[in-house]
Amino acid sequence: YSMSAGIDKIAFFTSPYFIDMTDLANARGEDPNKYLIGIGQQKQAVIPPTQDVVTLAANAASSILTPADKASIDMVILGTESGIDNSKAAAIYVQSLLGISKRARSFEVKQACYGGTAGIQMGMDHLRSHPTSKVLVIASDIARYGLNTPGEVTQGGGAVAMLLTADPRILVIEDKTAFHSDNIMDFWRPLYRREALVDGHYSNNVYVDFFNQTWRDYQNRYQLAIDDFNALIFHLPYPKMGLKALRSIVHESHHPTQLMAAFDAAKTYNSQVGNLYTGSLYLSLLSLLANDTMLKPHDRIGLFSYGSGAQGEFYSARIGDGVKPDDLRQQLNSQLNNRRQLTIAEYEALYETSLPLDGGDRTFDTRTDHSPYILKGRIDNRRQYE
Ligand code: CAA
Image 1 (cartoon, rainbow, N blue to C red):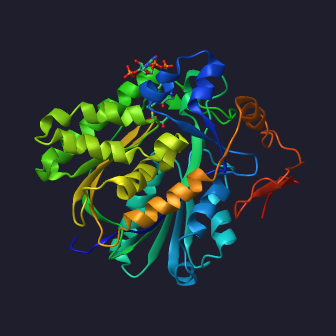
Image 2: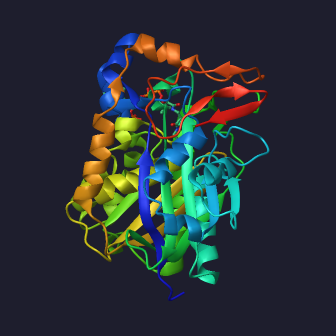
């Protein structure tokens, strides 16, 4: 395809609360350096009951959409693995809350943390046949493993919203990709559970294995080598995971320090927020665009997406002409620096407060959550958004 299409606008949203990983380590009787260095996590978003994947997504997308965008979007894809309904798509709620045109295809996509990438690739196919349209892709999730579990340090949550168009300013997505799927029990969440089940160390191994398979396949298909890339970014369930994958191939490069420096920039916000599941790769993209000082327009980057269960995809893109690192940094920092730190006791209390899985009416105290869109509770099996 000669057509240029990809991400024209991108925005991130997370909860106004966080916990510090040193506090969590102390509360769990772990050495803080295990969390800070071994996992690579500094802070973790704590999602209050007044936010769910619908409000996180609406809050992320509302900051980038103009009235003209809302009128011309004809596809809304929401990738999530922490959806609120087994039937109705979260995308329909978001479309309605934001006032997006009703002349749109609106639906949800699921394959663990891969759902956002599935949405982007579907959106790209749609743009190739409808170049004047706009596609809204949102990756929104809340990562929960449970109090006092090995996965607890890798929780988090938030949403990344991306507007895909022709001639995009942020990222031109190339029609070069390699993907791989297999039936793997590394991480899953049965319908009756709010917390994920995970075979943690196995999941790390499968992740690196899928990365290597898709990376080799991509290289063979397009005859490109590691030094054809200015940066490689990864799905980051936690920052160390991406580093493990990068380390498995970085010896192929003549400029390994450049790729390692780009990885350092690309984990900036992930290390402050935790796992966003579907959104993690795209928060890493934002981290890279805002904090890497070497990248120039037209540079090629590689993106590795991984969803347990499992699906991997490695694809490439070129940096757009309209990236403004200072503006991105200012937006992200002002959001993250304005969060309120919770004690571990406050976090544990919030963790137990959410809509019961088996139904029942609830009204939440919404006075402390000043986000533009909030979940007020549930009446008569209907979620109440404001
Ligand atoms: N100082 C520095 N480093 C330390 C340390 C210390 N005092 N103590 C331990 N460490 C290091 C360890 O050496 C280890 O590093 P390496 O992995 O490089 O060897 C790291 O800290 C973690 O230590 P453990 O492996 O002992 O930690 P753990 O057994 O408690 O669990 C985990 C780690 C498996 C990642 C767990 O947090 C988990 O299950 N997380 C959820 C699953 C997950 O995120 N999987 C990722 C792949 S699946 C995926 O990507 C999809 C998705 O989003 C879920």
